Amino acid sequence: MARTTTKRPARRTPTAAQQAAKAAEREQQTEELHRQLTAAVMGLVTSEGWTAMLAQLAKASATDIGRYSASNIILILIQCPQATAVCSYNQWQQRRRQVMKGEKAIWINAPMTGKKKDDESGEVAADKDGNARTYLRFKAVHVFDASQTEPMWQHNPDDGLYFITPALPGQVKRFGADTPGEAPAEMRQSLEAYAVHHGYRVETGDTGTARGWAQPSTRTIRLSDKVTPAQACVTLAHEVAGHVALAHTEDPMGYFLHRGEKETEADSVAHMIAAFYGVDATKKVAPYIGEWAGGESKEVERMLKATAENVRKAFRAFLEFRESPEAAAALLAAQEPALAAA
Image (cartoon, rainbow, N blue to C red):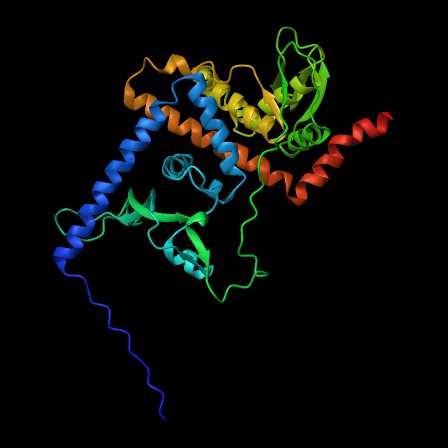
């Protein structure tokens, strides 16, 4: 008996009206995403709101969704607080996982680039060097979290499909500026290696009333000898993963003009790194945030988004450095003076 096969129906090309309706739907969804994001961002204009957001970013940065922008991470967590790994429908299919029926899509903003056209000729516009002029816009696209999918029947458990998402340590050590406390040795070692990686050396000594500082002229980070070991580590994170890694030290004038933003970024990165190592920096994070609340709403929104994105990138860069081959070499270089003294 001959084997019969069923042909799949040919895909129909959408009509102009259907395409227009789809475009209108996406435009509406993009506007709704902007409204949600604006409401969420404006809710950060308190020290408590900002600290809560940092905890979310820190946790997300240790998972697959850490590759998205800070704005999209906020959107993802608004719609799916338990999200850890997010992909499009087709990407999950390629990973041999199927989005389960009835699951609601998570909407995010995807950057789209296009070529500008001349209004009169309709040809692609060019700049003075003859290169095509481009524009950037954002379009709403839908994705799904791993928790909304299930393995396909042909799934092989050994093919690395399942994501391993390291969580923040459950045991948190609390300390304050005036409270004795310790930090994991790995935290100090990794931060000192990160300083060497950026061309700085770390020393301890008299810093007056400050907990520490970074001096670009001598490429030195000095930590106070009067603070607890835990506070010294947080200060080191503030200086190297915040100010140095974010290039604040390379632009002194920019720092003084925007001191509130720069200190908030450095404080925030230090707070996230401390939490990653199980240390809870109890001092109030981002004291400048409240001062921004009196500004014009669009400018406040722009500032908060930019700061959150810089903080996310800085924390992610530190995590990637810890796992890189350069980390071991930098750690050895950081320990050489101590070894020589011993």
